[in-house]
Amino acid sequence: MKLAKSIEEIRADFPILSMKVHGLPLIYLDNGATTQKPEQVIQLMDQLYRSANANVHRGVHFLSDIVSDRYESARETVRAFINARRKEEIIFTAGATASINAVAFSFGEKYVREGDEIIVSEMEHHANIVPWQMLCGRKKAVLKVIPFTDEGLLDLEAYRSLITERTRIVAVTHASNVLGTINPVKEIVAEAHRNGIPVLVDGAQSIQHGVVDVTDIDCDFFVFSGHKVYGPNGIGVLYGREKLLNELPPYQGGGDMVATVSFRQTTYNDLPFKFEAGTTNFTGAIGLAAALDYLTALGREAVEEREQALLASATAGLSSVSGIRIYGTAPRKVSVVSFLPGDIHQYDAGMILDKMGIAVRTGTHCAQPVMERFDISGTIRASIAFYNTEEEIDALIDGVRKVTEMFG
Image 1 (cartoon, rainbow, N blue to C red):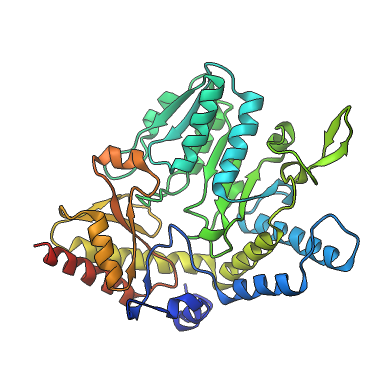
Image 2 (cartoon, rainbow, N blue to C red):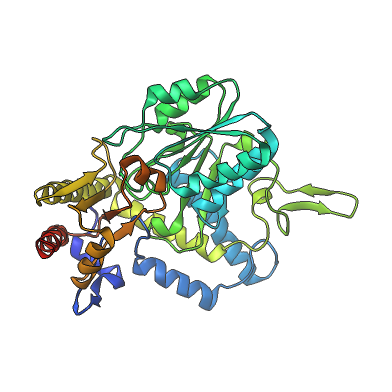
């Protein structure tokens, strides 16, 4: 399956990819932290500020009407992209972290009591651990953890054994930001639903790598961030099943989330506005829609196919370097490789790679329990996007080999 554009045309769409670092061409392999933005998104954001800047849902004048229509059109774009049933199930937030916190607070206020249980996995990003810990602290609930195997697969038998009549919600990542593992979320959701338990899926590391269908997964909540899917910073999405969203109390109060306000009583707006208090990041939402349109036009299946080919090259090449240890060897992965070159500290190796123009991530990747699981202080992570090239993968492998030779 071919992308709708050549790799040369695609790279020309991303201005930052043509820059130099330390006098060398930039090789950007930190896409798991944030993706670069195409010219189509950058120009749209600029145009919005220049000629369509007004508050949404607030005015009857020309500019407000234009931006309100585009904001609601962006909501429909997101709905279609993840195949939600209704656009009212799409809530705009500040990011995946904000979305998880919104569910943890609202769902927790409504349904969690002392002694209740919440299940997460051992491979979660901190953003899908800490909000649930905070909820457990407030409610005197219990956090239970699904372990994973040495190759980076969730132990589904252990998961089933964790579920009890006190389990109130399961929150699990779709794809690990360290291990790359694509978790069997459809199976995880089905098991929870057999026990009447809702599931939140963290899609921050899956949404950019292929087709995500929340109706097929059948999850109750799904979250992701714009900046990890070639869109702007400061915008994210919370998908929630309509019935649940209607039951949950809002987690913030302010303008636009209300129907009526008096000192006697306040009533709340309908979905999705009940969860969008104050002036939303409407320019970010419109920019996010442009990024999703860009991916759709390229061909999402083709994006996934290209990234999987680059992942295979990176994994094979790094494995050929003496002393390399790769963390996360599951058969189904997104395009992420975490590794350590022998006993060389990840920060030292990362800094040397930077001098070669190669941007990788070093450290714990906001997933300290994963590092504890392997008894390491951190890893080097190369996270690959469709705009990366085979030549860049070769440069990474050569760079890592030089690092190991330098340290003897």
